[in-house]
Image 1 (cartoon, rainbow, N blue to C red):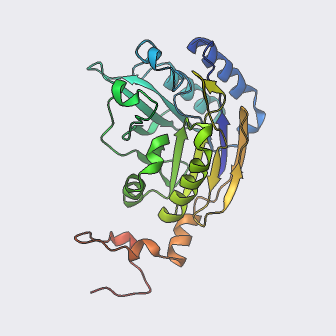
Image 2: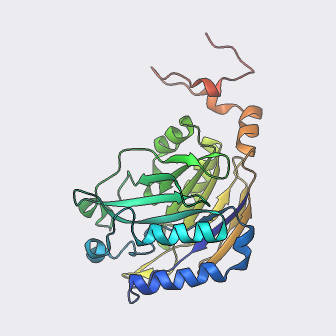
Length: 277
């Protein structure tokens, strides 16, 4: 499975319309995408994550301009597109940090409203409403979970995705450069502890005086870093074996060994090497 991570900057002076047009040109000009199965973009790249004062005016309905752009790329290039996330306004006027995955036929195969909103040097908790459900769907074969940025600090969410069948997890982010080592640590740890392929795309550039860290990465269940980008805009590519998490779990069935009072072990994790009372 060929993966492409597109690191993007969302400069303060650039309008959403100009940014969408620029990214559209960038995507269509990248000939290598014709051999890609999944394209992933960063968190809130249309609105700019740290542009809190503009959230309300840059919010869009679910079937808005960001989803329309992702759908056009998916159908034109015949690939899956994880559009990153955008500021969604729901039917009751509430705002959400929403991620969507679109299939090559234009269908939405997974969607997710960010559950863990960030309140440290951020107005996300003040302006947005957290999601309540998981985002899991088929992406090029394996069940794929989707999460967003700060979610990386909450392993319970990732375990819930795995219990729903996820064998790979995609993370879109606007993770600051000041905490880049946390980004590297959490992405690697989540891949290893959940035994998944972890695909993480981060924003770059500067927004409202905050430098974004980039260094998008893809990590195997073993912890091997398959690719890591730098700090500039552009595409990064990785070749991922979507069947590897399943094989690795059979070889090293750690998920079947977890114990917690009152917690049943899901049957799909039964350890063939042991019998439990």
